[in-house]
Length: 89
Image 1 (tube, rainbow, N blue to C red):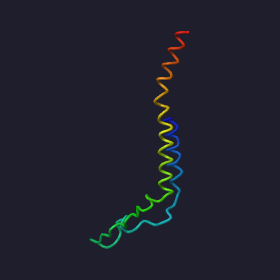
Image 2: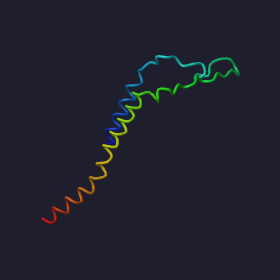
Image 3: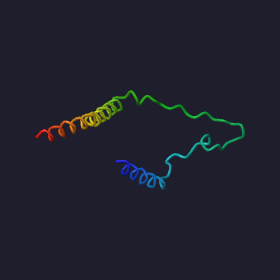
Image 4: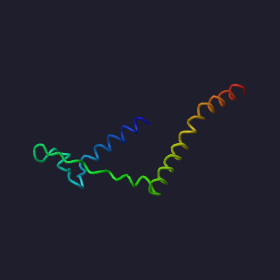
């Protein structure tokens, strides 16, 4: 799994290199502009967090993650029980 993750990460990083920005960097981010002039970055609009699709998507991701996590807790004990049954028979 770690190897797969590394392969996907490296492939994704290489694939992202030729992508051009849709919005150019502001003068605040690049440091351009007059000497001593500092623009404040724009405020981030967090209102999307309360919208129904965002909440529904977050709940689905949380439940999916829990569905994957919980069986991993049972696998070692199930293996131990099956190994004990195998040695009895």
